[in-house]
Image (tube, rainbow, N blue to C red; front, side, top):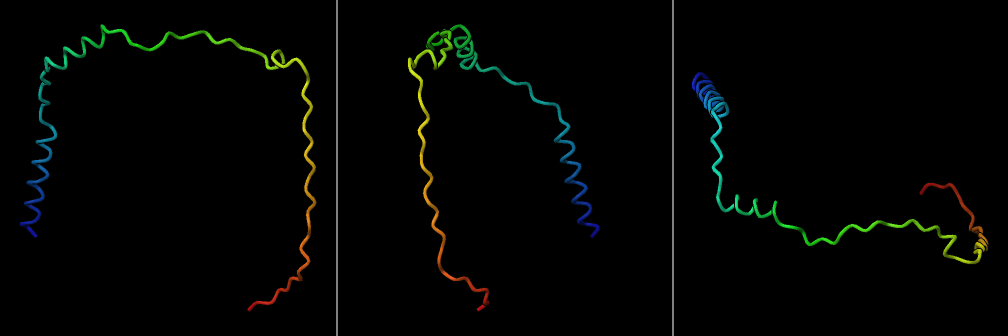
Length: 87
């Protein structure tokens, strides 16, 4: 048991030392820097944004539409007898 607790304590200490170490400075890649620079300069190929016009549907249709009346289907009730027997 003593041996196991020593290993756990050493592992915990190693984890804390690794987690608290100073971060490494990030090295800048010239290839990536070149493409980031080109991305800022370049113009996109997307079309320009057009202003949308709001049109009232009533202005487009010169006559008034009447709603279509759909008759409800006749509901036929079942004719079988129902029993409450448990089988």
